[in-house]
Length: 166
Image (cartoon, rainbow, N blue to C red; front, side, top):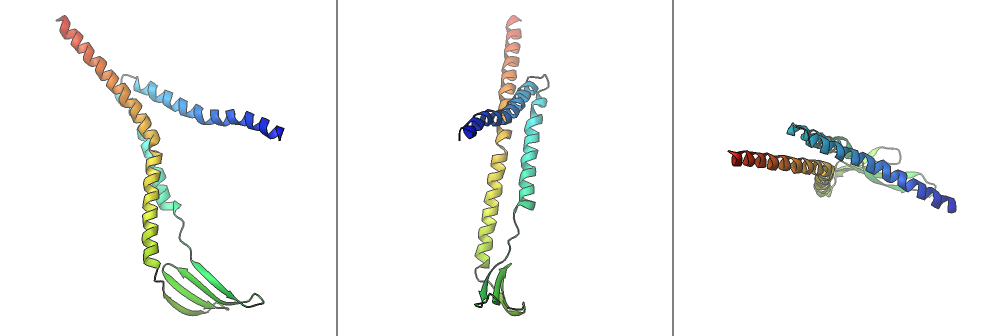
């Protein structure tokens, strides 16, 4: 018990540093890029972050949704032999006998509403994933806007001072 708490005390700072250090380095890099003369350099990291969020959304939409497998029921004898098997897949219910022969096949009446719900859930998941993946994009664009507005303000002040001297 004491060893576990000591390991927890040692592991916690390591985990916190391994998460916070890269975040701090990315923010420092963004600030450094924003302070450069070329104001468009500050948009490199936000664009990369936006592209990464699109990659995440498209990869989830393509590969993340598990293909809906069929559901089914088994009817067994006392000795465990399968007497009848019923499977529902892609909106069709198929009934098999114990040897795997098709006895009956008919459309599943609840298939349409289940597919509508699955589509709505997938769209909501993709939307939430896009919003969550764009949190770094919003933060980086916020830093860029801060330094852009600050630079614009200083440029205006310089122009006003030059006009006052004339």
